[in-house]
Length: 162
Image (tube, rainbow, N blue to C red; front, side, top):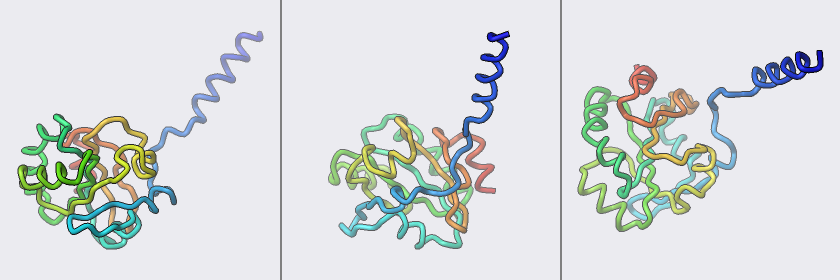
């Protein structure tokens, strides 16, 4: 009898765990700051506000990330297919020089910002990810429509953009 009761409690506990992806950014993530190509600093909240009314993709990447570099042709194909969608690139590069060089080298079209704290900052902690590239889709109201795609070829990414 005790065994059945314990199993029931564990089962109910597992069912009640929140495994849903977030649809809103935390206050800490919104306050995190990023550095633009001209050296300007902007919070995530500002970056979202600047894109209010538009659907856009956040791509977290780095020039040292082989998966990020290998995905570039597919990323460019996605940009061509969804030309009305903006792309916001957030880089976890180790230096600003490496980041800027990679943008030029791979001819990345979109808005670019450097994450000064890399994967240790509040935004990265919100993502709770130890893997890049990472793709998110943000809807026109600034809500997270797709929280996590690790590959640009993930069907959920295109689905969220349609």
